[in-house]
Image (tube, rainbow, N blue to C red; front, top):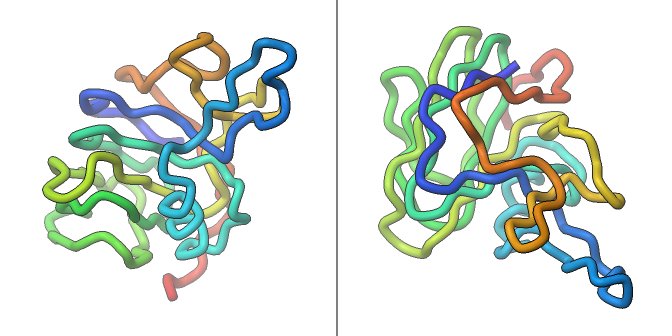
Length: 157
């Protein structure tokens, strides 16, 4: 489980979306920067289409209730794990009880946080993506708990 300490201005769950349903009036949704989501997923060993968190302008502060491996890609932002300041683009092991904070984006607009195993929310029409236009999928992150499908963490690459 992941506890949302602070959600950030707009943090949503995104995967690669719902393509091919426009004839039914369903927008594709999904990550705006699909390459960045794929990169973050690759860094933690997930499938390219695993759900992650998309942040806009600034990210959330999250507390992990179990060990996890995370990575951030996309817009450049400060990533703080516990007391350690990191950059984006590398996988890092987060220990149980540690917080991860994504600071304001200094280049770009959106960052993507992937957790090994993906973000476990129920799929809607084949996707776990939040669609703010149609209201499909999970709501933007509130102060609450988010589940990760991660199993036991492996050492970060």
